[in-house]
Length: 190
Image (tube, rainbow, N blue to C red; front, side, top):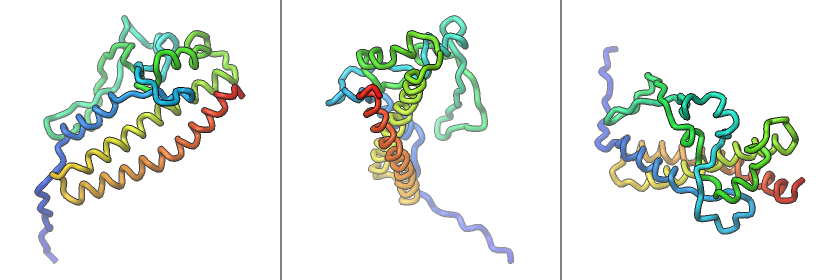
């Protein structure tokens, strides 16, 4: 049979630049994830998920490290080409997940000491990683919630975004459970 392909008439598409700007806006909304922050601290810093004075200093050259960078065209992301670009060591592996007081207080044993590793250091490295992922997933949920509200989108894109948001929510639920366990452990110094 020589059936011709059916073309779906999608009239409204997602503008990649708008999407990326929305996601970026939520990345810039920091909050302190420390277990004693109570009402979230209102002065988050760019906390390093990988210590600047530790592991990053081993791979830096003149204050910069090479990081993968994807090239963007006006409408679509070109994932076929991975390039590396120099980024300042102060901006690499950071997230706005802790205020300066809580970051310094909590992570002092790993930021200002060599890896031995002690039980405390292992817990703090894993907690910092968990908090970064928690931060990223929470932002993704908020980003997709905002993107779903765009009136210009067709139902197929909205359904896809709702499904992606649901996936992030499942991951976030599990991370929340583990973060609460870590919070209890760190708070009681157990």
